[in-house]
Amino acid sequence: MRILVTGAAGYIGSHTARMLMDRGHDVFVFDSLTRGHGEAIMRLGLSDRFFPGDLNEPARLDHAFTVARPDAVLHFAAYALVGESVIRPDIYWKNNLVGSLGLLEAMRLGGVKKLVFSSTCATYGIPDQVPMNESLPQSPINPYGQTKLAMEKAIIDYAHAFGTKAISLRYFNAAGASEKGDIGEDHEPESHLIPLAIRAAQGTSKPLTIFGTDYPTPDGTCIRDYIHVNDLAEAHIAALLHLDRQSTGTHDAFNLGTGRGYSVKEIITCCEEITGLKVPHTFGPRRDGDPPALVADPSKAANILGWKAKEGIVSIVRSAWNWHKNYPQGYKTPKA
Ligand SMILES: NC(=O)c1ccc[n+]([C@@H]2O[C@H](COP(=O)([O-])OP(=O)(O)OC[C@H]3O[C@@H](n4cnc5c(N)ncnc54)[C@H](O)[C@@H]3O)[C@@H](O)[C@H]2O)c1
Image (spheres, rainbow, N blue to C red):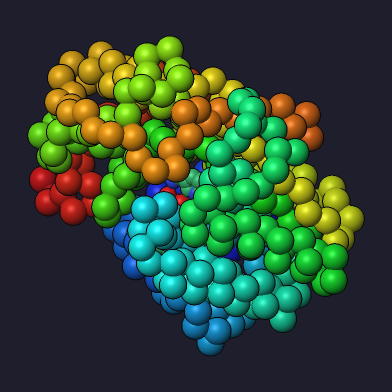
């Protein structure tokens, strides 16, 4: 299949692009590099299939569609920092919604019918039950989650009106890295626990702050469902296969997690055991809008897509450690 991957210079997109290539697909990349890494595209060997451009630049999108002639689009490109979205809702709505609507239009004009969209558990807001299945109400509590939910709704309307076949994958906490250790997580600023804990242990970033120790959880810290980035990549391939079996004009959504949550303290212990280093940390107050626990019920994805996460927390942290050991400053690490 010819597949256009938006955001493949970023974390999850790059791992998925690699897996697609390993499975024999023709992969093309559309990315503005505003939050991603040209170096990742180089390491994937995709430089000559890379279309630089912003989703808000119709001419560049049009060029990418004309040259790549994709059968399907995997849409990762977005801004994804919850805190930033609260203080800069303007750039989130423009990028994640207006930009993504531009992509939908380019797909419609180019006759591309298959779409897998990177959505998030943040569309649920604060859940009233855990584990979380797809029928829970979606009530996001920050602009980031709102933009993703708005986009899911736009995709549903396009599916009904224009025959798009689409899947929204609602990821929980992506983590881990490629087993080769040459691509991995490198956000600026980084807001995810595992890279922050490992970098604090390595001394390449400040001590970790644990926000809140009085949550109604066994050790008082927040619980999250960490899912290996390669398991997410597998889910995209399962989603594409599923779309092939669908008639036109369909949309479905799936929660992607392991179904098992770990607290912040448990993650710190796991990082210390695997790295053999202490994770220096301090304690801070709860952050606004941090639910005590977010854990997926992944049974719908298992039943319908035939997908199940294979990797557990040890393999996640080991692979992340491998990446951070090889590249302590991420993609900016000077070449040896
Ligand atoms: N990382 C997670 O834990 C997580 C969880 C839930 C959902 N998601 C979603 O998964 C997707 C990928 O996340 P990630 O962590 O890999 O993010 P990332 O920031 O590492 O990658 C995003 C990529 O998209 C590109 N991009 C952003 N806006 C663009 C635009 N307007 N035009 C072209 N390219 C653009 C960036 O340059 C970057 O390469 C995002 O949509 C995010 O919302 C991520």
